[in-house]
Length: 116
Image (cartoon, rainbow, N blue to C red; front, side, top):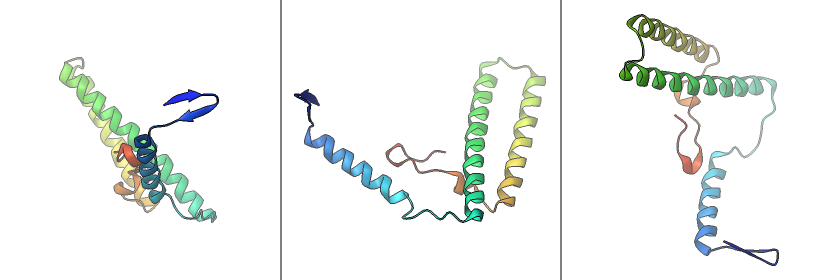
């Protein structure tokens, strides 16, 4: 891509790639937004639980790396495992409360793939 006299020159491959990614992203977006208060609560719960689930999975991976690296004592491993198990159980309770399944928390990020 070159800039020449306030004009941007783009390779046709770049435009085709961009158009394909834009089309894939557009397919995953809703056609309209329903601002019903119940839907807003459900959508907000889904967003928050998705973020918590992402953080929980990252924490699990970090814990596994630290265990494999030998930087945790047996007592720390026990406490960490118990804490992660309690968090997973609480997440299951919250998903049940809001009528969500685990796959509902997995966002499609278009060309980047699935979030989890």
